[in-house]
Image (cartoon, rainbow, N blue to C red; front, side, top):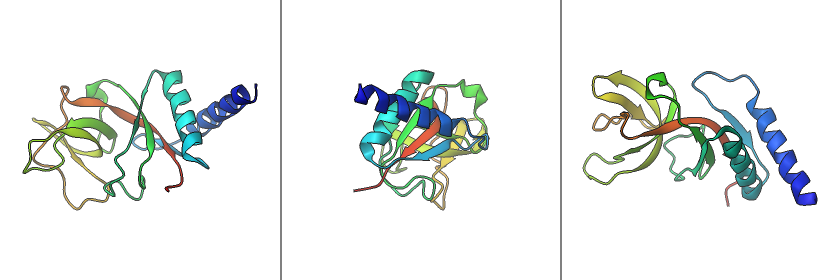
Length: 150
């Protein structure tokens, strides 16, 4: 029973935090006391909206918004709904000199005939060698569940 109450409390905490007004391009960020609490709340929230949970890679590219590894919930919204400054998750090439493709979370900065150009908030450059298209777009970040880093 205690576990059910704890889960319900974390879900209410997550949903309460997510009901606060936020900029259209900025998902709501909640801070949790532990990684396990953040994971539980993120899982419950993702299930409640039909979203998907991912954990960030831990790079510094999205600082100061995201520090270290962080849980984020993405919702697959139509590609045509993407706007400048949205945080997107996509499959892309983090390095122009390599063909390797990885899951990336960055901010939409410019739309052109090839798709959306992306950039990390902490990067001095945009990823001009790659674009987010309907084919590699996974979803928009709708919530961030941060926790203390080990």
